[in-house]
Amino acid sequence: MTTHFFGDTAVLTGRTMRHVTRSLDTIITTAITPIAIMLLFVYVFGGAIDTGSVSYVNYMLPGILLITIASGISYTAFRLFTDMQGGIFERFQSMPIARSGVLWAHVLTSLVANVISLVVVVGVALLLGFRSGAGVLAWLAVAGILVLFTLALTWIAVIPGLTAKSVDGASAFSYPLIFLPFISSAFVPTDTMPGPVRAFAENQPVTSIVNAIRDLFTRQPVGTDIWTALAWCVGILVVAYVFATISYRRRIS
Image 1 (cartoon, helix red, strand yellow):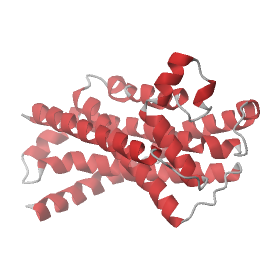
Image 2 (image 1 turned 90 degrees about the horizontal axis):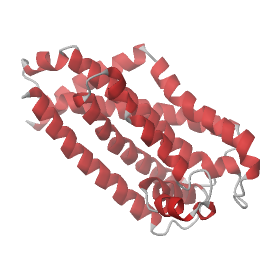
Image 3 (image 1 turned 60 degrees about the horizontal axis):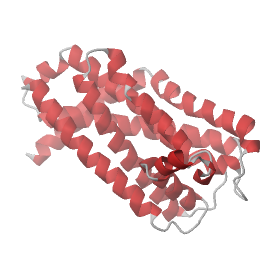
């Protein structure tokens, strides 16, 4: 049964990956928004923001990486919605394949596409002056956090992809996620914010994730931030997976 699931998921992932490779503009579009924001903040606002001894591009890159992921998952919801409207799911139900493999194919495709976008954004950041003395283990820890965050947001994207009534509704959910890093420690220190905004910024998931990645990049002690970040990622992932699975069962029943 397990072999059957993995085999079906691999075949279905190949199908969705072909859709992505045939329209690379989706990956390019995903990277354009965070790159534009990065250029804007580095060259327009960066000089007015005090980040101490850390260069501004180094300071804000973790937030840009999260925006890249939030921007990319909207295409996951779009692809899933398109499959639902095109009757692909009904065809798959008539075939002897693992039903959950259909969802996992979209999730894994999202993961691969977002990794490509993240590599592109990091490449541009290097051109802008980003430098890190982090070792291999620190980079692996950053990669692990970003993968978990991608999976968590992707499973959130599955829900509107299955339940939306229109294409716009399927992808619009990502807008609040894209703007969430702006109310965090991603671009400015939270202690510069007014009381209520600061309270929200310091207690939302993006801040702990950004702080953990920033400390790993700068070889600073991560403290409790990394555990808080992992707890947020895993918690969101589990809750989103449960609701996405329930939505999927209701849709195909």
